[in-house]
Length: 376
Image (tube, rainbow, N blue to C red; front, side, top):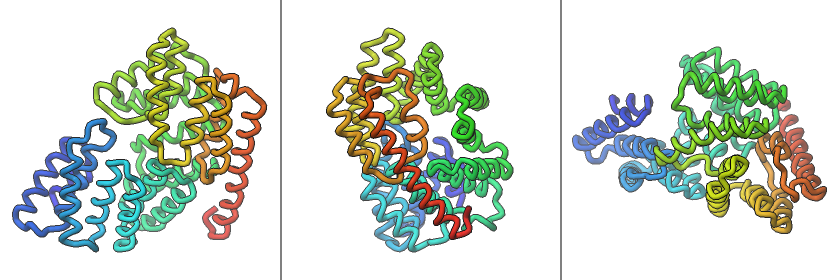
């Protein structure tokens, strides 16, 4: 129980100490499936977002032991799913997470993991909203204000990704009522307000305020750089991106690789063509391994950058066939300040309009479904 408490608190120091306690529990009972599962979870969070993953084999061993000693324990299946998640084998992870939920359908932790799976690993806005709504129903009477805050945050994020701007803002604000110190709610709120008002300068100001609260938020550094790029303030974008890249390199973090093309464009504007080309190549490598619905839009943008209009249009046509696209794509897909010749072409713009038409058609279908269920 001491180990579980530290596991929930998170942070590398707490996670390492929790692992010692789980190992101690295992030494007293080497068939203790829950202790193996929790040890695996600690390993997962220790390696999460890291470029180097020293605990990955240990996680696999703990997960296998947990499943061996209790294959119907939800935590055992969660640990096994986490093993595949950290290896980026997302399709292999999903059955374990879904079976975990079957064995413990009232687990807000598993539902949260599945919701996050559908926003981060294999993005699917419909599935994300489905699990976020389940989480809200389960958490309705929990009495834990912090947990309820994050439940409303997750639902607010799911709603904005499906184009429900006002409803998203309502749940983000509820999240902050339950827990005013929820930094992630304030962070998401900055972008929800942009979706509502279209004021990028306000978005950047809110993000800068958040960064001053916690200067370790490298994710916010990246977003301030990106917003500055869209504002065509390249000097400012470059300043923030340089800090972000320095942090990413020093900490050996495997994050935000999908942003490297925009980062490269800023470096190129600042006269660093060699460095820009490195970022373009990293972006290409990321898209090559992308398992999500966004692979083709990634390739389309890359081929625009290297002036291959035939391949750019080919991949964009393929992207128009995808469903459950995030609203952020619709908001920003035609906002780039430095459009290439292909991006400025009538055919490219018409294909983007097709993506937008399909998004709003799906939005209306989802809206009717939610209204029928009394959720809107």
